[in-house]
Structures are given as structure tokens and as C-alpha cells.
Amino acid sequence: METIETSYRSYQGKKYGFLILISILLLAFAIAGITLGSAGIGLKDIIKVITAEASEMQHQIIINIRLPRVLSAILAGTALAVSGAAMQTILRNPLGSPFTLGISNAAAFGAAFAVIVLSAGTSQSGNTETVLLNNPYSITLSAFLWSMVSTLIIFLLARFKGATPEVMILTGIILGSLFSAGITALQYFADDIEISSIVFWTFGDIGRASWRDFGILLVMVLIAMVIFLRNRWNYNALDAGDEMAKSLGVHVQRTRLTGMVTASLATAVTVSFFGIIAFVGLVVPHIVRRVIGGDERFLIPASALFGGMFLLVSDTVARTIIAPVVLPVGILTSFLGAPLFLYLLIRGIGKGYW
Image (cartoon, rainbow, N blue to C red; front, side):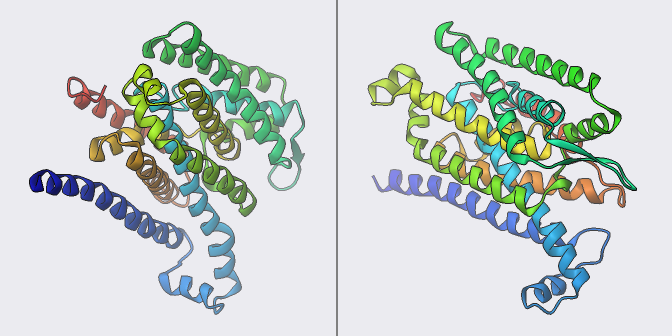
């Protein structure tokens, strides 16, 4: 008995150790994200801002530019990673994520629809002509409603047709292509300023982060985390199959619907602010599973922390690797995510990960 208890404590200790390690690394990378950039900012300057001894320029760079960008990258990575982890469990599909299931493209279409058709974006003339997104609430609502169309189709397919994981993924690919075509159609009727803005927006870029966006995203992430954590035992039961979950008193359909709606809303808010950021919701949960296993009690918070760290590091690299040119982070996550997921796929085949 002592051997079993000792082994169990060691097993649990590794999971808590991983959470602590990721938390420390996240804090370290957050500080690095604030200091790295074309303007020379050091730890002393951060301390000066805290003690109200910094110059006006230092205050503006840290408080109004870098800090909201760093915090927004953490929240966006958290939202996408946790949504992916929940979808993979809810659908019992290792390829489930907001990107592969077409939800990101649907949300992007909704945001583009709001900008062009609902006039949520207005032309702004000056030295640089851009589209000012003057109504983020209508953009977020439109992105959510269209993402729910994709979610509803996949959910109904799984509920009434007994679709296999492969069929659901293929459906997601088809829906993603459909909404991408819709974005192209909207661009056809847009003017040059709107087209250039939407094309750049779909790359996925944290550089447009503001304190207003951060506040909205923070509320959504907190709501999503509370819902996912409250259902962590239900998700563990779903891993054993629907019949086993029902025998344990889990309302399977309600749990699935609640989880998919929550994941879709978190994805919609993220995409409506920052564009399509691919592979975070797909790769991060699999990396975490390989390290600490699939226990949802640890998988959900670990995916949240690792997802925030992953996107923060990616964004920091994207804006410094060829400085002063700043790359959209969505480009970097696609380059990193595709080969990394292929590696995980090859290593996981035949080892119980798929």
C-alpha cells in the first residue's frame, strides 16, 4: 500500500511540478516580452514605471504598447489552447481544434462581414489609410454567430448521424473552405482600403491589442475557464465513452453543447480581435498530454498556461526576429505548428495517443 501511495504521490507531484514550471516560465517570458524591442527598455525601466519615476516615453512604451500586447498574447493563447483541449475531449477527436473544425474561419468570416456589410469598420484617411474597427462589440457578436453555424453543423452531424472523428474533421475542412470562399466574396465588393485591412487582419496579429480588447478578452477567458474547470470531471468521464459517462450521471449532450458553445465564444472573441492564429489550439493540448497525461483536472490549467506561453513566445520572436519589421504572429505559429504537429502525429501513432 505504501508503494502504491508513494507512486501516486510522485505521479501527482510531476503534474504539479509541470504547472509550477510553466507558471515560472510564463512570468519570465512576459518580462522578456516587455523588455525586448526596438526601444531600449530594461528591468530598471519597468521598476521606474511601477514606482512612478519613469519618463513619459518609457511610460507610454511599457504601459500603452508592450504591456497590453504581452497580456493579450497570453490571454489569446490561453483561449485557443483551452478551447482546443476541450474540443478534443468533447468530440473524442484528437484533431479537434477551432482551426481544423472550421470555427476560426467561420469567426473570421463573421468579423469580415461586420466590417464590410454592417459598417463596423470605417475608412480613416491620413498619412496611412486604414480601417478603424470602431465597434468591436458588433464584430465579436457577428464572429460568434457565424462560428456557431460551424459548431452547430458539426454537433448535429455527430448527434444525429453518428459521424466518425474522420468525418467531423473532413466536415470542418469543408466548412473552413466554404467560409474562406465567403471572405473572398466579401473582399470582391469591398474597396481597396477594406481589402488591405481584412487581408492583414486574417494573418493573425497581436500588435493591434489595446486595453479595451484586453478587458473584453479577459472576461471571456475567465468565463471559459470557470465552465471548463467545473466540467473537468464530466470530461474525464467522456474519455471513457458516452455509455460510461451516462452511467456516472453525466448529461452527455448538455455537457457537449455547453463545452462547444463556450469554446466557440472564446475562439470568436479571440479571432475577432486578432485574426486567425492557427495551430495553437491543436498542438498545445497534445504537447501537454504527452507530458502530464489526459487527466482534465491538470490538462485544462496546463493547456491554459502553456498556450499563453506558446503564443507569447511566438509573438515576441515574430516582432524581433527581423526587427524593425514586425511579422504577424499567425504566420509564425503556422510555420511552427505544422511540422511540430506532424512530429507529434508520427510519434503518437501506435502509442495510444491517437
